[in-house]
Image (cartoon, rainbow, N blue to C red; front, side, top):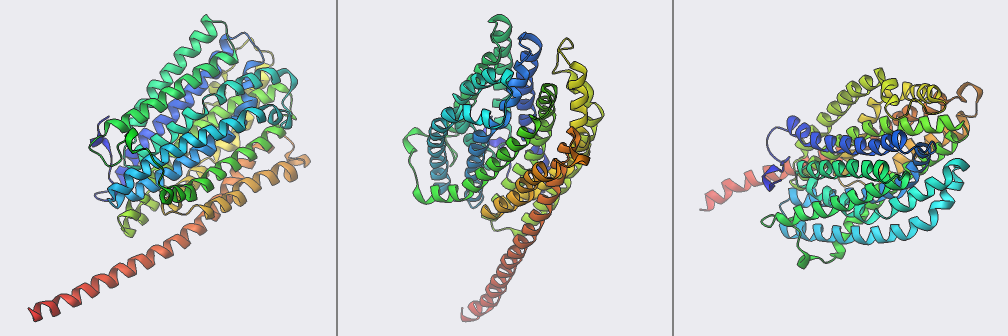
Length: 478
């Protein structure tokens, strides 16, 4: 985990650097999803509680509401650090790092204060079934105890990635994940716990991740982004810059969570077996989502570094390379998972579970169309990473609200009630429809951004010509 592991996007070939940078992020996300899936596998197979799996599934989008907002703020910190690091403004990079971590601590405290009193009302608002309510509420209360750790880890790992180091978060995530799985087994099998056991294992691993990530930043003593307690202070100018990018990104993630909560309320109109199936399908969806997100992270970091270094031609290459890579990988992985989705679903459900066959078939139904068109999600993330790396924050928020959130809400309330679409698979169509709408709108934003890059290129060319004209005059005077 030495500093030499970081990748510089401002020089050398880009195509393979983008892939090499994305792979550890991808692996980190997949491992995290597998560890989260392990929570459900352990509780579904060994707790002896037939409501445990459905209870955890009922909380997925509520817990994501706050966690995704904090991840968005961390992303804002990553964009600012990558731009300053690419411009080699070392003092400002250091101040941005320490400002970001203080902000993460403060946001974690505020979000914790908001989360606990709203857990019960949100569960009731979503129409959580009575048999799941007590376990779901207990699970949320414990998970919310890890909000501060999650906030600090998201920001610290975003900083590491911003300077080109995507391997260290992978190593930390791997260790934390193994810890999570071991604690799951200990708490559920040996201690006889249920949803409380897997929740407790989760927050312990979250705080370990936060401490480990900050410790790694502290070890980079010779680097401008190294962490030191003595340098902890808020730089108001940089804080405003981080918030300007991070708040819209966080709100965008929150809008996704709110929209997913609307989807959950529609899911809750189906029998309990379908609620459990949706929870199982969420693991498959989540695994692909983190793969798409890895290309967004690589595109955002590479774009940010090259914007700081004032290299518009490389920014264009980052955009096209990321788009090709994201769509190709998502197509291959999603279609492979689609072929084995029934087998994947069976991993999460004990064969003795009531309505086992219904749960498996409902999972297959939900994921059918979604996995077929998941490459659209890859395209959306690649474009989103580029525009965020350029410093755009409000425009992507607005376009995503229109293209994704409003489209999904409209589908739930206007299209889903129609007889032709009032099925489990009919509801699942809201994903590819919204991905298409968002990708088109973001592509329009990318065209606008590229026009600004063209202006940067013209300004650089004019400056170069001016310098060339001045040089002979200077030589003549000499």
